[in-house]
Each structure stands twice: as structure tokens, then as C-alpha cells.
Image (cartoon, rainbow, N blue to C red; front, side):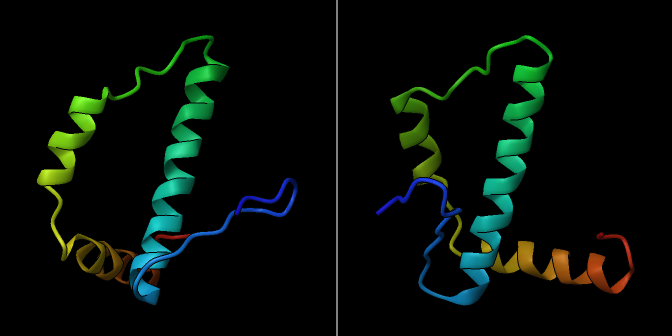
Length: 79
């Protein structure tokens, strides 16, 4: 359920994956905003490209990304 004006809802099987999905969503939105701000149009993935990437999905990727974010935070590199 999406509610207008109520922010974003991210779900996942665990907290680590939910946090990483939220971070990735924010990063993707920022990239898309910059593309539009530059007067360009993003090139979206085709259904076939989405299927190809889904097969390549690595179940441990959110954990690896979480470890990276935690290390960056510990180093003071994240705001």
C-alpha cells in the first residue's frame, strides 16, 4: 500500500536487507533526479534486462553492502 505524502515503505526479510534496500532506493532516486535536472531522460532497464539481473542476484549482497556502510560510518565517511 502506498499512501500519498506519507514517505516510503521498504520491506525485507530482515533489518539489514530493509536498510540496504532503503539506502539503494535513495541512491537511485538521487541519480534519477540528477539526470532529470540535467535535462536528460534516464534509460530504464527492459523487462529482459531486469530478468537477467534477477538471475544474477546474490543473496549475500545486502550483508556485504551493510558491512561497507558500517565501516564507512565508523571511519566518519558518512554524513
